[in-house]
Amino acid sequence: VQLVESGGGLVQPGGSLKLSCAASGFTFSLSRMSWYRQTPGESREFIASIDSVGENTDYAHYVKGRFTISRDNAKNLLFLEMTSLRPEDTAMYFCACPSYGTWGLGTQVTISS
Image (cartoon, rainbow, N blue to C red; front, side):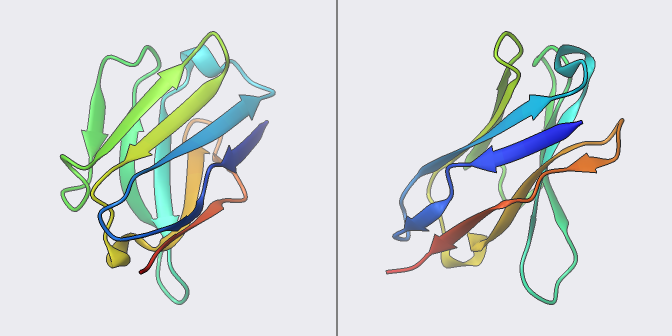
């Protein structure tokens, strides 16, 4: 089971960024998937999750209305589209498959002018 995140970078406040997570080694299309983030010295915090078919999503209140989780089961890809980014969104972002207890290595997102 492997998850590989990409798409992080340095963005100005108010900007947008789209993260991707490539999944392999398991039946992605049957698995609920999630995004988390973590800053140094802090616990990993939940951002969003999506069911296996992409019909039902959940968001943390601090990203609701700004972030959108989606997936492409044909390509085994998970996405996180982030808009109206704030400096406090700066973190390492991870995708996860809760069923397998698997995490990617993360992609760094930095919001700064």
